[in-house]
Image (cartoon, rainbow, N blue to C red; front, side, top):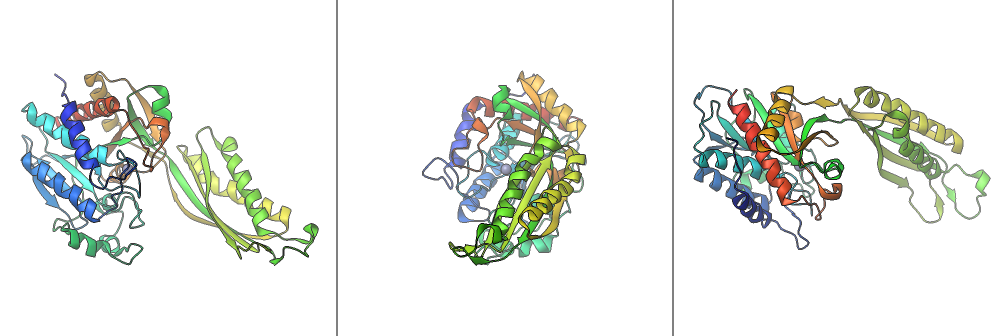
Length: 409
Ligand SMILES: [Zn+2]
């Protein structure tokens, strides 16, 4: 018998959490370690305790609720996501994953199912990286990829530290922030892209995550008066930058079918209405699931920057800031998700994530994977973010059965 989700209770729970930090336009404004985050965390702890889970908080505020299995010494299956949101973000990103994990444990309890392995629900701290500007902070520390003291000393725009805010809201825990012996990690999340919604499938089995490459280019020309300087006498850094940006926009066509390229930030100097710009700095983000494309991107972008600089007779500098290889999720977890969808009778398809998630860091320490549910119109990090409730339930049933599968291995 497949596990079933109590759709009405799941919905009520979702609406209750959505009211904490709700915006007037139906979104969610619940930044990490704020009072609203504390309220949502307190409710989660209360509901985990009601379920008889053993709750613990680690030194990054990551909060776990453990349900014992038949074999208390077996490595646990970790399930969860994050309760923090983007500023004026949506109600589904993160929160839906935590509540799906909670509902999964409730379903096991309803049915009196005893699993072989323990299962631990986890809410990761500061996944969004919008208040404290390092995304996936809690899971990064737990995976050993981010230093705990560095993480605790990060500050927000007003100079308040992670450590101080953890203490203020009562989530500066004693447990070490490390995941060392999990059997697997499974996370449900909204897709944040349009593919699933367009395909009509309710559930995505996430095969992996795009790799990315970040770069920064600077163009230097000559500042001069916008009036007396003839067009042929100019060395306009902004014209070169926009020329390069336009070529970079076309670059994915030449790289691969899935590649995307974004010029996201541009700083113009002196940024004055009647002065020819002498210096422009801009960033480039290129992503693909193909490691060769991610590796080749900086050379291709630098070529476009150099060529545009030459056309406008300006100087250029180019810096490679950061890159991450594409990630393939664990075959074990992907198979469990397929089995979960089949058990629940839910139509699924295989997808790749364009964005990183806590599951990406967990992949460094355990068998990790994800379930996606569709984002209508692919909209996310916005108040209008929306997923049909039937899809949320289909995703939760897939997730619950996949979790059960993993906990019986
Ligand atoms: Zn998220």
